[in-house]
Image (tube, rainbow, N blue to C red; front, side, top):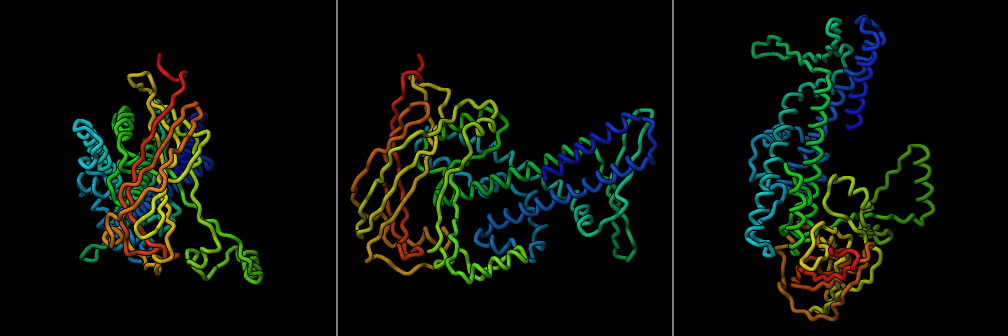
Length: 480
């Protein structure tokens, strides 16, 4: 879609340049006429792509605020169009409170680490973001309302006559519009015609770009907040992406949220590595199908338990470098510092049912802020990922549970607040590339056992943990 908008803008500039080189050129010139015709089709294709993107966003938004677990089926449903119009109306009529609920905004009062003034300040920032998010929705609704007929018409009908253009020789101005003709039948069976006139101009292209960015931004926020909700087991968290009219607010959010230790913001992605099959006959069939059809249909679920035994699931850190992040945040008043070396161990606990539970917070990177403490030391905001592991005793193994929702899991407790004893709670040591040493100790808070079991019969526990950290900062980084 970005490519369409870029091509549209560059194409219009080429036409303008071509005519400026010869202002007396005739409107019937075949070369210029074909250039305009190509741009007219490209403009209609841009409208189509934006409209499809809006439909995709509407599907995700509807499912995530109604029943997230229907998402895999919803994408392939034939009846999606039946409720799309009502979802677009929801875009227009929803309130700020709806935005805060649908995008998983937190209850600020649950962050006990913050002072009353900090809570008040953070609440205001979140309200500003919700209001701006609502304005994005209204912009998207307005585009969809105005261009949906054009989109549907272009999707099903390819007209040879897309538009006309004119050259004002006195003013050296170009006038070009795309015309889309729509025929409707009224209640008395009389034809009624409407003609949609779409200008081909720099302002219109900029408008298309604005709408595409609105949709992309909201879809990114929606998905990221849902993933954070999963990672925090439904607990309150501060969204990583917020809209703010003031650039300085982002720095203030970092300063406030670094005090909160009751939620995690992981920056990891899951990767499923499928090992090649050792079945020679299967390999022969697969190679034969791919050579002839460029496709092989495996009649087996890739997430089947038996299949997963021969594959491998890993988690890898997002490879985005500190340099790229710095470029993405112009004028950012902090420096992202990577980890140079690490010495890590597990905080290990023995539960009352003989299960061994392991937990640790892994340091991903640190943000060295521009502020200093009273001793002249720079302040850091650390980004960590909490990892839990369970080594169950054979006596507690069970049968894998049927698929369940997060809500069902949270209400399936059979042993809340289990007793446990600490086996070890080591300090994990990290050395940053700027020479700063950071030590982190993870401490288990509470453990609750559910009646659910994982793929290999291991019981599923709900856990809460916190971590303490201390720093040793080299003298060259201290403020004199």
